[in-house]
Image (cartoon, rainbow, N blue to C red; front, side, top):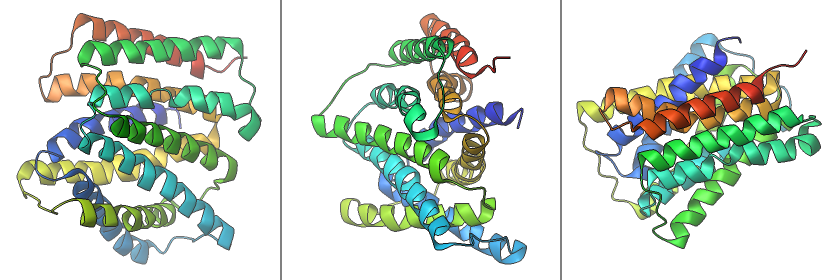
Length: 284
């Protein structure tokens, strides 16, 4: 688990670049439903071959389904809906970067965690670094109250799913847990695509590559790592990693897409890294 945070950050941050490439050839909900459909189609034969141990009680299935609804369905659906309604990526990132703060506020009551003053300092520095990077990279503009509301719902869904995983999640085989969660996500997302969009998809190499990356690296590997880290450690420490997602996404876009990385964004990256270090370090 030592390198799990670094691998998670790399895969999760890279997902934003892959998403930009994919949305050039498909509408948001259609692309998300296709992503979940491919994940389920990949997991079903693997599950039949490996025959993993399934949850042994009905409540374990319920817990997996609830996490699937909160994270896979509502978090990603509301994020994509805010994009569809015209909210800029910088504004969405700014709203969802509040997730570690909300998780840490709720962690003492939900998970019985004690949050030291030094960790709060790290959280504030991490939030400041993420905000500096976002503002330096893009214009933060609210196009409509509905779009902003969708982004806030995405924030609450991710926060709720993270806390629910810590409180009720149990270690399950990755194939079984992912299959349940992505099947639930597909069931919730598909009606949005069918009712709101034309289902038009341009099958370009760019879309296929984006879809493959998001399904394998982002949906399966990164999400499995995230939930494993939440179960193994303190949820407030793990959530602080999200402060490095906006700087990480900006860095990947700079490398892959050639997007401008202003000097102020580099400063925000460094500040967020210091904050995450303070928030995640284990005291003797």
